[in-house]
Length: 209
Image 1 (cartoon, rainbow, N blue to C red):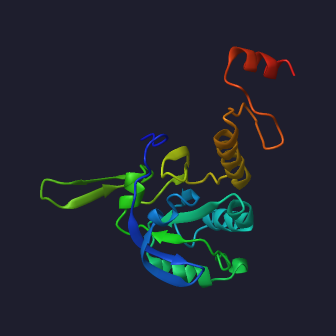
Image 2 (cartoon, rainbow, N blue to C red):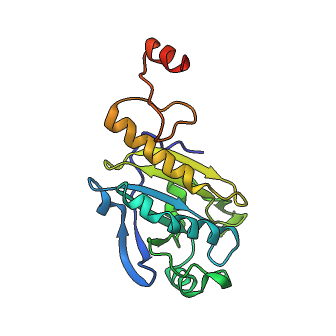
């Protein structure tokens, strides 16, 4: 598993569906550099079971991300046509109608591979035929990218394990708090708590409270 924290986020240009219905041929994270943080999350498949719960959960909190200058972007290895079809399906039928943030189509698997969240392995056999072991889809990876394009947080869940969107917001708040105040965020920190001065005196003072 590659650790991308502290490194530049792998860039890409791909097809995507934005605003729930619009096709974009050259979607890229470059548009956010210097302007917004990015929560980039991968999910395994359209038209499945855990995935719509996650996509709707991010949509329900989208205003919270936006007021923190965070762009939410989702990626799976499905086609843009598959994304579009799922976006037209009502929520009561298992669809994701109402989701407005971008859904990127990683149809050639390179984005998932570059972020090291691609399941399965592929190789060429003795006859130079491409073979794969396991299904080549994405794990539930999530990456918080700062305004300079550097990954500051990553989390990867196995396929059955859905993520906690509130925890993602907490991590965003922690990063912004550190950038704005220069203080660290101790265990279980949230935006209502004090930060921690990274000194012996600071930790002693914090633990004594």
